[in-house]
Length: 170
Image 1 (cartoon, rainbow, N blue to C red):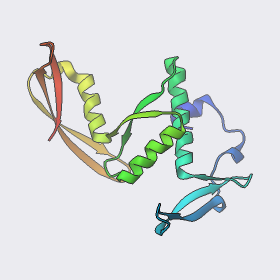
Image 2: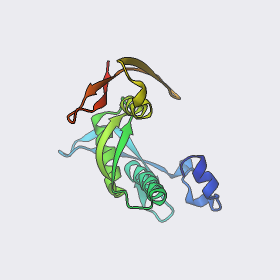
Image 3: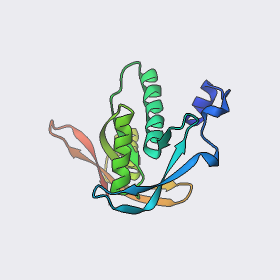
Image 4: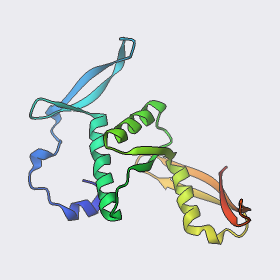
C-alpha cells in the first residue's frame, strides 16, 4: 500500500496479510560468487507457509503494485520505467533495485539520482520562464538528511533551430 490514495482505495481487513511481526525476521549470511561468506547479514521475512521473502522480493512486490496503479491510471501497459534513487545508493543497491524491477515485470530504462530528477521536473514545469540563464538551488529536506543541489538552466538552440532548455548541475 502506497500513499494516502491507496489507503482511501482499500481498507485493511485482514492484518495477517501484512508483514509487521518482529519474530518473522530471519537473518542469513550472504555468500559471494566465489563461495566466501560476506560479513553482513541480509534480512528476509518468514511467511506462514514456511517460505521466506528476501528484501529484493518485497521491493519487487512494491514496484509491481506501483506499475499496476500506473497502468490503471494510464489505461495501457507500462513496461518501461525510469526509477529515481537517492544519491547515496551504492552500485550494489542500484543493481539490486534493477533486479527487483525485473522481478516486477518492469524494464528499467534508467536510474536517475533524485536531485537530477527534481531538476528535470523543474525544467519541464518552468521551461518557458528561462529566457536568460538562471541558477536554481533545489532543497531536499528529507527525513534524515538535507540535500542541496545547484542547477543552471538556460535556453540553447536545438537541432531544429528551436530553443530547448539545457539543465546542468553545478
